[in-house]
Image 1 (cartoon, rainbow over the protein chains, first blue to last red):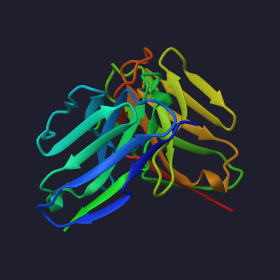
Image 2: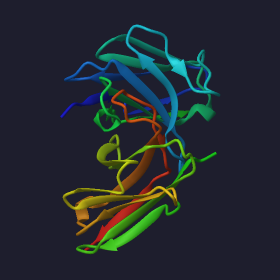
Image 3: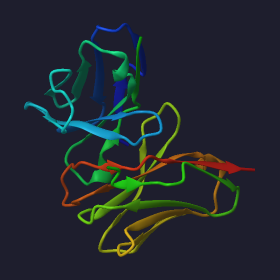
Amino acid sequence: GAVVSQHPSRVICKSGTSVKIECRSLDFQATTMFWYRQFPKQSLMLMATSNEGSKATYEQGVEKDKFLINHASLTLSTLTVTSAHPEDSSFYICRGGTGGLAGELFFGEGSRLTVL
Amino acid sequence: DQQVKQNSPSLSVQEGRISILNCDYTNSMFDYFLWYKKYPAEGPTFLISISSIKDKNEDGRFTVFLNKSAKHLSLHIVPSQPGDSAVYFCAAQSSNTGTASKLTFGTGTRLQVTL
């Protein structure tokens, strides 16, 4: 089946640095990529939706200047957490697809970010 | 405001028995529901879905029931197997018209199937 590869799976960084998370669709063209964040014992919360070649649409309360999303190609979308702070420590996960039914979109493996 | 709720954070079931995972929602605009299964260090994988025009959908050992009046759905796994041990997420969306769409997730239920 279709696979979305997400890297890195774990990252630890110092406060104030920026971290880039990549999601690649390996055998399909992901026209749409959703980015989620999950805090411990909470549900996956949608941060933003990106479509290839256009600006991402951010959910209410998500700072677009802090969480930079780039979807420059049909196989790669990136999320950059800029000037990370300890409160940004979370599990970030992407979900991509070609616009089919919701069950036909595929999650990446997730990235656990820890900001010291 | 948690629009999709899974009130049981964990569930333990003996192998061979039925596992019942529950999910409640508050948004009456939701009309398509999905269950995902997640193993540690992996992304969630799609398991089964149901449209609001149905009240039951079955796929092998997995059956999802939808009670629209109660805004409740449940996932039944029978017979349960040790490999079913995972975290199960309920998710909902307001349209299933064939376009990639936003999902609202529950907090998950950790299922442990014991020998």
